[in-house]
Image 1 (cartoon, rainbow, N blue to C red):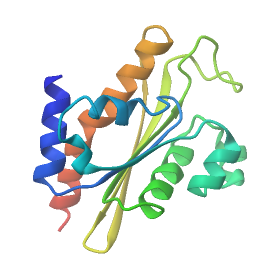
Image 2 (cartoon, rainbow, N blue to C red):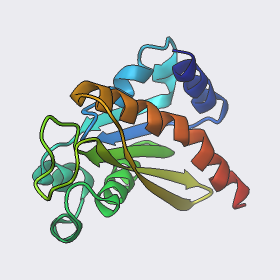
Image 3 (spheres, rainbow, N blue to C red):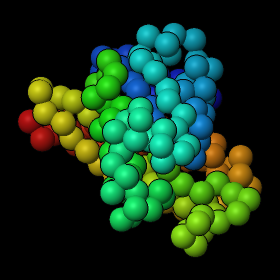
Image 4 (tube, rainbow, N blue to C red):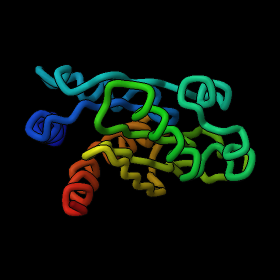
Length: 165
């Protein structure tokens, strides 16, 4: 709970409005933040987008990107974050796509693999960051760890954006 309070305060202090595009976590990032009173002031929306069609329809993720790199890939996560940033009233967007289990991905991606992206709009410029991580545990433990990880990394990447000035 302390981490969620810290991130909520960070969003408020930084005057950031958040949008999420969640595949692996299916809305858990926003749900976790919503546990903190006042967090809604910094949340624009949370999108749960599982299928390739929904990623394309709501976030403009290219089918070519999906076909070339696979659903669990940093290029897909990046396009998801960019779509969430540009299609909503947000200064920062978090996205993830991965394999929570119980089975591995269609392309033999191991269970627990999650690709993340963070997109920021700052002074009329966009900044994008991506990572891939692997988490241990069952399906819901992977989902919760991924949701928390994406939030924990937000200040780190936001600081990189601010330092680029």
